[in-house]
Image (cartoon, rainbow, N blue to C red; front, side):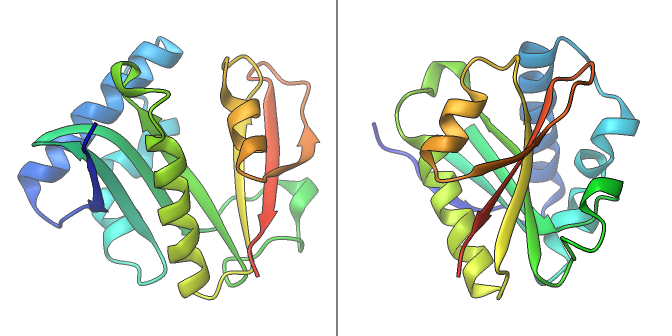
Length: 168
């Protein structure tokens, strides 16, 4: 299969197509529709991923069809248990890594992560944070296969697992 990975363009049509792809994936995986509380970055892709110099958003394309996405941005969460451990200067965070179910197990997610990690290194981050959910069938095994280590498993309704990878 041939596909390409590239940065999202600051183009309203492409941004709308990315939003549609993301919301379709979220509906399929989580069973919910757009919820600003959780999806504020999707509604503001330009603000969160395109304009900041140390942030980026990638799409994978099969022809003109979006088949995967992944974003990286400076760490901007405020979890008390990571206070003073992660900063926006030294830590990037991965967001919105999603691949269309018809294109899974083809290496697209690994290639997106590799592209994101290269961007993080070039942007002088020393580590990458992410969180996933234990109820997602391939979430933890995938991230572990990419070299991410569990830092905390919460006993919350979302079965949240926090992970980190040193990239220096």
